[in-house]
Image (cartoon, rainbow, N blue to C red; front, side):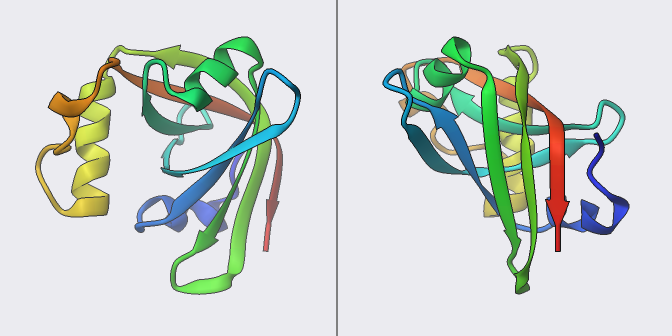
Length: 132
């Protein structure tokens, strides 16, 4: 399933997504993240560090849901349920730097040297997409 064209502008703004993963005990874990979209693959992407709770959750259970609210119109949203189909370090530093340009207006993500784990791109394949 694809994100509709009418919602693609959300990935050009400083839109935060709230990503829900499943903890080992089966309860939900929700975290705000910077969000991106790969229109060729139809995947939503976010970036995290290896070993963080959401990354560990997704390695154990790839089921994921997220919601985004338009920062300019809080009644406009995109919600996705799907599966994390890839967690990769390939290109993850470049990706976090691209996101930092959009979200922080800086050339490089400032916290790279402070993190213990390598950066990871999480690719989400949507199975259900809801928009308003």
